[in-house]
Length: 393
Ligand SMILES: Cc1ncc(COP(=O)(O)O)c(C=O)c1O
Image 1 (cartoon, helix red, strand yellow):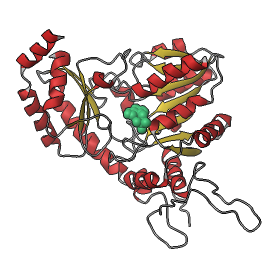
Image 2 (cartoon, rainbow, N blue to C red):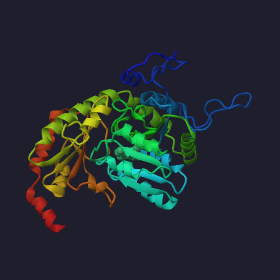
Image 3 (cartoon, rainbow, N blue to C red):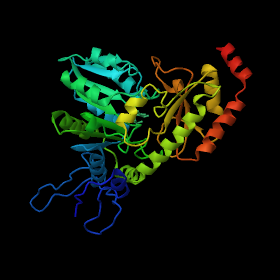
Image 4 (cartoon, rainbow, N blue to C red):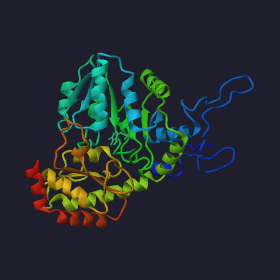
């Protein structure tokens, strides 16, 4: 029997929604690998038809996601990119999309390509200067405003309620990439977002072993129906095995996020006034430009993502990323293990990301071990080596 009480998200997550298998009373959702589902004796379809539409395993994740977001519906995709691009696929040509200048680079590359191919106009704004948004959103012209908060990898914080007001006044849709602030800390629909996006590859799954994306909507309207159609026609649905793993990962989201947030705050505080650092970018620090808005918007921690800007510049940043032993020099984020990345190395040529910036994804290890690892690596960076690299440029 479905529960009626409002429960904390930690409880919903730990119990996989209120899942209980009606036939077997199993408390873990099963995997249904079948790609096709039989019609009944009257030749009618049941809830499922073909695996490219959806499957029962995907549906269980979607139900839980909708509850977490306070959404009317959620859709799970085979990657974050498959989900995010589906939001733009249905837009008629000639319309304008507004997006931040610094955002997840893969989506920006796709937007730049698609806009030129499809006659969509792309307008960028600076998320560090939120007033710019008001200037670029034009009533009757702007169809969709895409924001990312916190913005990867500077972690600029957008005021979602304000962005929603600006978008809605202009008759536009507000979509929020909330990948680094999952619903255990941010519920963007409650703040006015129309669509919320997560790369489920990151915190939702949390173990760096599943690619996935999720969209949630505040209302099931024509745009949402279009997004559902795009998923079916393009074949962007997540497979049942991945959906099962994703659900397994999500059950510990609350705990993982709490620990990663606590670790990241300790690391940010340790390096904030460190002689090797030009600055530490972490919204949990009062010195961060977006700290006040983040404090107002978030109900849990500030998350595990932070960036270090090195006084020694690009070469010291790059060298440091090769010297750590616990932090793995790898892309991606939101997993239980800590990662370090010289971000400009993977960005697109027009990227506005500072060249002295190292992006850290803080995991759930011991904070003191992580701080020691960075300190030892800093001590191992040979300034002569970096000078040589500078000269050979
Ligand atoms: C903020 C953000 N949005 C979107 C994506 C794309 O997601 P995926 O890699 O799952 O396709 C990523 C991936 O790094 C991301 O960090």
